[in-house]
Amino acid sequence: RDWNIPKGTAIFFNTWAMLHDPVKYPDPESFKPERFFRDDGTLNDDNVQPAFGFGRRVCPGQHLAKASIWIMVACTLALFDIEPAKDEAGNEIPIHYDYTDGLVSHPLPFKCSIRPRDKKAEELVQEL
Image (cartoon, rainbow, N blue to C red; front, side):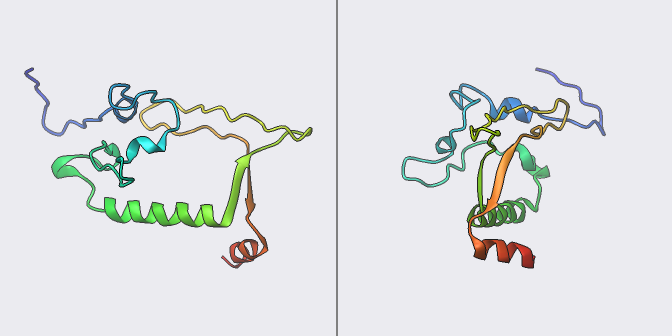
């Protein structure tokens, strides 16, 4: 194809489509973290990671960002039990995965229960 992209044009790629491609990710709407690992359990770096851009314009801070997110998630999982919320009868409230529309999409709020795992975790959180 011949494309004429004027100088200074902002180009946005469709991240959602890239990460929901059923050819690359069968059943893309299902939570299947194993799809991002090789058979030996190591991370498959061949997967597309569009959040940080591509080529010469890739974010130079992507490794710091990924490490920071890893630490934050690890600390959150170490300190808290995260479960579906329960109704008055004690039944789990199903989580419905809805998202905003637009250029930058994010999950809509949902009910869940986030509790410190134990007294020591609660004390640590209070100190922060």
